Image (cartoon, rainbow, N blue to C red; front, side, top):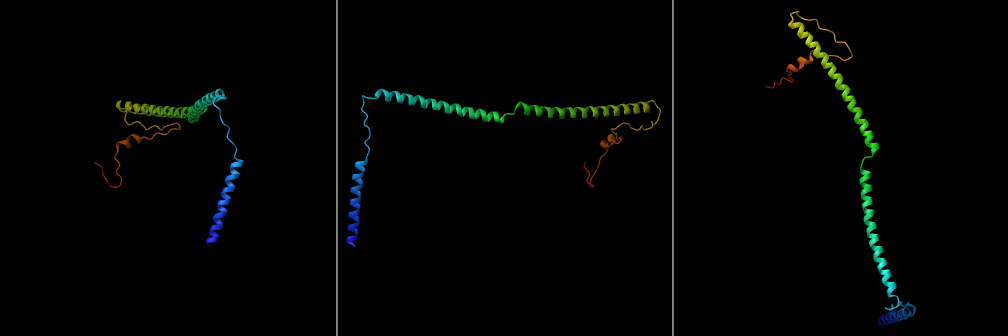
Length: 159
């Protein structure tokens, strides 16, 4: 057993020595920088590198600002979209206006009819014959009295 351990240890020591020698022989030597030779070029290169780094930081800020502006512009509605919204809103408002005008006309007709009934009743002509409403819009004479009645659902009375 001692022989096997000694043999392994000897081969490992031999491999280490061979590896060390091969490394020393094949190692490339680093160029030595002599302080006086290229100091001006080195200083100029370092200054250029600092300028490029500051320009890079400035460009990164500009890119970040441009991305934010692009995101904001994408979120805003375009003129065409707002024009479409305006046209749709205008159509709805025009429809509401025409509905309101039709309702106002119906109410004016109802008021005129009631005024004529009141005038005929106060003049003493007696009970006027109910006129049949003409036109495409119907009128319910019970609509006014419906609001005056009290409707009770399910036997529960409200006080």
